[in-house]
Image 1 (cartoon, rainbow, N blue to C red):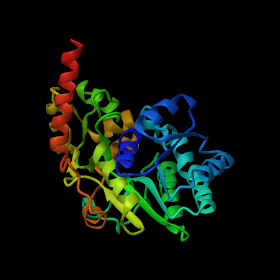
Image 2 (cartoon, rainbow, N blue to C red):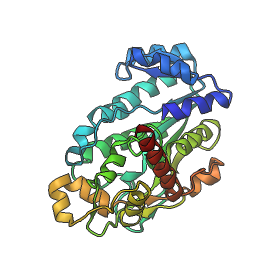
Image 3 (cartoon, rainbow, N blue to C red):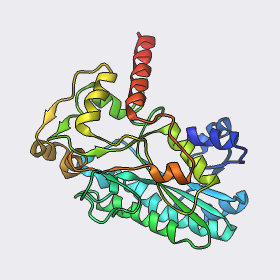
Length: 310
């Protein structure tokens, strides 16, 4: 997200301070147009000093540390990100309050909507109250982030429930983990493939984040494209766009053995999200209105890269 968001904020006229715990990333932040700040988000004193020195009007909380996906051990794969969404959120909020920050924008994720009722959810629908087995810690961390940001009466708190990212430097990008899994046919359609996913191109997500920095009332916003779709619909078309063979199909019982209950739920029971509120209240619309055009673009990038490698 930072690679997309920082240049957009700079072009919009904002002075951006980019916090990283890695000394080696300072050059990249400067290249993107930010003033680098080295601090450990889990150290409240370091966060407090960093925020106080920057004197920001707005804080944008995009802290994650997501490694290779392991659906059988989902919470374990998100251990550090869960700490950043709990301890890191608390540290940022405390430092922001001390610094008089007027607006606080934080990253969330659409996939925690309760798996009951219709397939497409609005921001008012139940969220995170019945997580799948293996996701309790991760969904709990997301709920903690949202609750703390929205309860901060001293600032304007906005929570962005992003759809599944695709595009450059994401796991569904030209060199991404999910892209390679689809190409290798290790990303199957499970059961009826009835899980509804909402996607968002990483550039469109960054545009929505700039909009949330500049406008919109406090609250929750789904940042997704216009077309929630079932796995049975989007996964074969993604494979086709990538020039891969159609995905395999496996029964849910087999998927539970291979990918755990979390994987089975995401492929068969997930609920998508509506972007109507973000379109209206943030005056934002995605350039990639549907994953269909975005996936075609991704396929062209993958083929171009393969040709260059050859």
